[in-house]
Length: 358
Image (cartoon, rainbow, N blue to C red; front, side, top):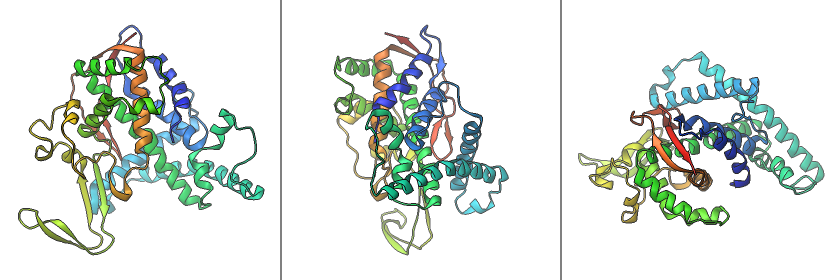
């Protein structure tokens, strides 16, 4: 579910915050605030107004707690079997604050569910205008139509907040990090964006932008937002490969075994991508198509990311709109991309660039 109308509303604030005199700035925090504002509208029906600097004290306390809770969760994933040794009172308190804050919105959603059941309908009455629709069709309310389990709703909405806020913002930041260091790629992207002309920038137009699609794929290849994936075997099983001295024999896997796979390593494997696997080259996607399970920015199988289309559509929209507003880009940071891993990964050094308006 992608609301480009709402995204444009908040993106205009981002554009207004970008220096118009060519001064360097860090784009990454603006993108994370953009997706914080849109994510909280999408999930709760209320924006945190982070871009305007109007976040309430209560919401800021939640954000600080939520950020630390994700850090602690990432630490436990990294520790694997040793996670029971992780003892951090601040992490437990952060989880409690996050859950308590989310519970307030869950209670509202349950009240909404009860009102629907009382009316015997799937939607409350009222005018079907844009504003009413935005207030009515939040993800949390949609989930509450399916269940009244408060714990389940609370956990799901916190998970969705992590996915909606962190992932797409990190992807877009990485795109501009790379564009600022590769002027020819920026010029190719600008040519494609300019070809849009006066057409309305909707999902159909975005899907037709072939070079932008290659750019997103190559960025996700080099800097996957989820650099590792963990799975636990629920039953005793045998995998067809992984055993033997060469890894090509079957291997027995007892129930409870944890698998930790690195998407970052997979996407840079020279055996798959060739000797230039570490290079940034969107044009590689003209001739090379990875096989199944060789390119996994959104996971795969039945547990693949349900928000893949939403993420790529919104990332495409933001990138195109910025390319329409600015004709030149420069990097103002010589540092290499350095991963800051929580449950997702972003550049710990930010995205220091300068943009020149059209």
